[in-house]
Length: 119
Image (cartoon, rainbow, N blue to C red; front, side, top):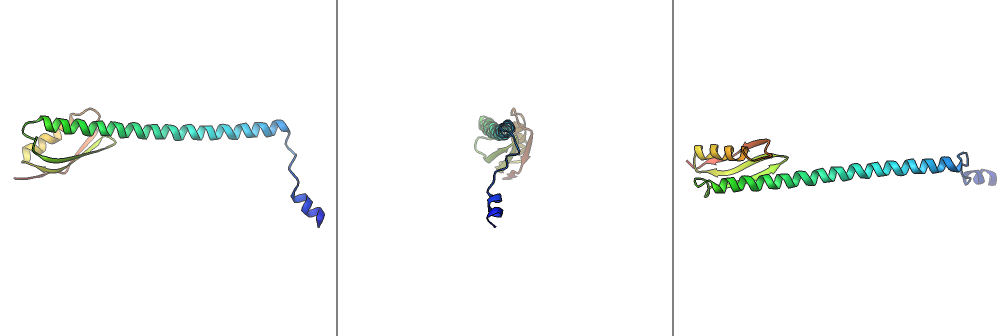
C-alpha cells in the first residue's frame, strides 16, 4: 500500500525542462491575448458610451435651439447611436420637427419618436 501511495505523490517527469518552459510560455501568451481582448472590448464600450452621450447632448442642444421647441418636455436617450424621444410635443408638426433635428445629428443611426402630442 505504501508503494501505491508513493506513486500518487510522484511528479510527471516525462516532459523536459524546455517543454515545461514552452508550455508555461504558451499559457502566458494565451492569458495575454485574453487580457488584450477584454481591454479592447472595454475600450469599445467606453467609446460607445461617450459617443452616445455626445449624441444625446447634441440632440438636446438642437431641440433647445429651435424657438418653437424650447418649452417642449422631451426626454432624449441614446444607445449605440439609436435615439429615443419621449414626452409631449406641442403638436404634430413639432413632433416631426424633433425627429428631423435628432436625425440630423452626426452619429445617429435611427430615431424612435415616442412623443405624444398636446393637441
